Image 1 (spheres, rainbow, N blue to C red):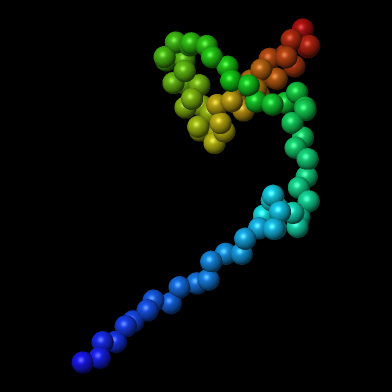
Image 2: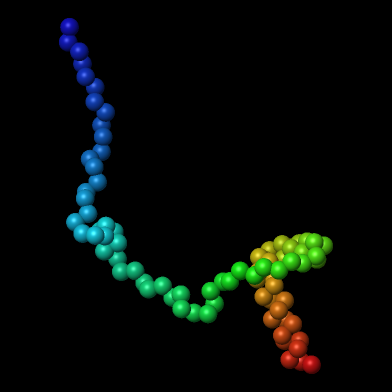
Amino acid sequence: MTEKTTRAVVAPPPKKATGFLPSSVTEKPVAAANNMKGNKPVGMTFNMPHDWHLEFKMTAASLRMPMSKFLVECYDAWKREQKRK
């Protein structure tokens, strides 16, 4: 009796890189990171009363705005108001 052997079709292995970096990295120049500006986000930690926090969060959500952006806009509005005094 003759046994029939079946082999799965397997893709050839990927080509080995010729240098230190893969060709996908060396083909396209990568723009330099612009991380030297002073606008890098920084975490803030402070505690607020629970009810105040809930109201602030709900207001930001109703405006479809992250709390951080809403806080910045509130502070900017306060600064404008101080200049008018």
